[in-house]
Length: 382
Ligand SMILES: *Cc1c(COP(=O)(O)O)cnc(C)c1O
Image 1 (cartoon, protein in one colour):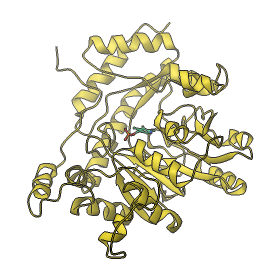
Image 2: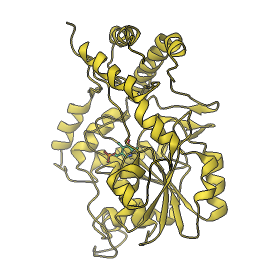
Image 3: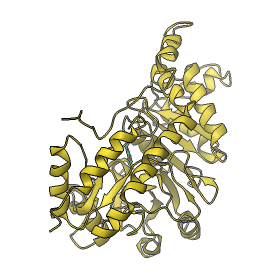
Image 4: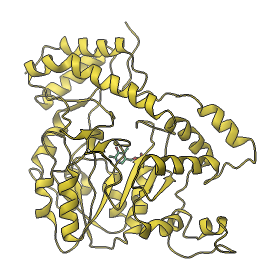
């Protein structure tokens, strides 16, 4: 049998090892905020016009926790999130005592359904956290307009969408805050890592303080104060400069990485178009005016039963495919907050039927052929 095709495979894109070696050499600065962390900050600030300050974090989860601290989320505050997302999108706010309010998603993009947003806003709503699923933008014009009219903060969970755009504007630059992930499954990685994008001067200094254990250490290093001390709440959210060195080597290969991933995405899309139509399989939708990030390729199969059989069928041919997410409102935690079956029907349906295909920078055209052929050879559509 041919070699197995994994679902994900992180790839070295060039200078990762050389930069780590360089971080280790020289002045031996391998804790946080060394030269490579600064290079990553500058890269993100320069390549994402509208970002006031970019701060590397140990994960997207931690960047979301920082966002909840910066917004001063209090017990009883409500935070609106799509029911179809990863737990971290809301856990960060629940840690501060927030009550999650689950919004259903659009059937085409699986993004927060902007037409259902306004009805979920109450006097207690403090934030809405849209997720650009698969790196395809949410309907940001509507979401920003509703949030503005109600005085609700927007925090973009942009874990999937780095360098994607909505009507010419980069994702991650709409919300007052936005978060990125550099986990191994994301387009750009350092194993585990993330970033907080601060899009207003208002939060810039406090973000540095929260990230540095509640101290004004960053001001101290800039010579703005002559000693550093405890000034606010905070934690340790900064990654080692060795990880930043790895990440910088990936970021500077942005064009190569995105071109490779675009080829994988279009490779699937072309090979599967007719097949999908014949078998009532929904392929990803990219609305007009949206430039996607090529984060993943997924299928929406006709039923849970077909998906279960399809996973086994692909596995038998050495191809790993995966599903996600389980609807958050139906999780153990979600139910504690009143979530019940039927609350978010589009999420519940998508969650049963979605299948992610192998997707990584180095996935060869021959492997895409193999995955497509395996899908075409499936016959058990009942
Ligand atoms: C991956 C992911 C996260 C969490 O990222 P970490 O860096 O692993 O903490 C959060 N939200 C979404 C939508 C994700 O896909």
